[in-house]
Image (cartoon, rainbow, N blue to C red; front, top):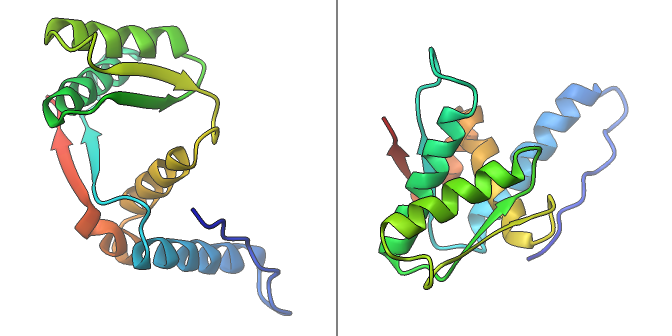
Length: 145
């Protein structure tokens, strides 16, 4: 995957304006030659739920869906909840009998270029507007209750 570098802002341009332009440029370049064919985005309401319930449910849904699609590996970016994230993934895989077929792994942020693709997809989707439209053809959204 090609790495896109941020350019220096032109004279008289604020840093915020320059950052927005760079993000649009990066998303547009990604959309022109995406390193992936499809992306699955899992969302769930968070209001009124315990802090760790939603991420666990989303990861479990991701694991089951990935197993159904025939995935052999799930790679999740490390955060402060690695043990819980791995437990949610492997627990869901075990429930559908896919623990031997699908390896789940948590790795440090940006350790793999596809983690960058996932970050870009998530950013563009949540930003909405033109950025979401740029990646819309790649994304299937799954709403988890």
